[in-house]
Length: 146
Image (cartoon, rainbow, N blue to C red; front, side, top):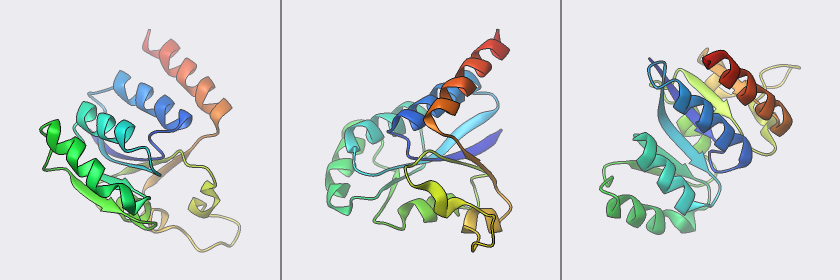
């Protein structure tokens, strides 16, 4: 079982990644998720997948996220906030795979002489998808599962 960190969980690419993860519950466990500001969708994902940690870039939304999680009986979920929340989640030792589904994900690259992201320095498997590529990947996963 691989623990997965999903950055950008509430966007279209993140939603596609969630669909694929849901197809293989015996292989992947969604351990942590991050989003920019959509706390309703983020809380729903956290509850549905039973994540341990969530990150919200917009720190002004922490109270609302905390309320939604507590209302759903998931008050034990750790909440990180601010611009470094995604980096902290991706660097977590318990997550073996990081899926980067955020706009402007270039800073997660580990090539072309750039300073490597901490998740890459730790040797984690890092997956990046573009929206069109995610649709193709979802179709291939569905076909393979049949």
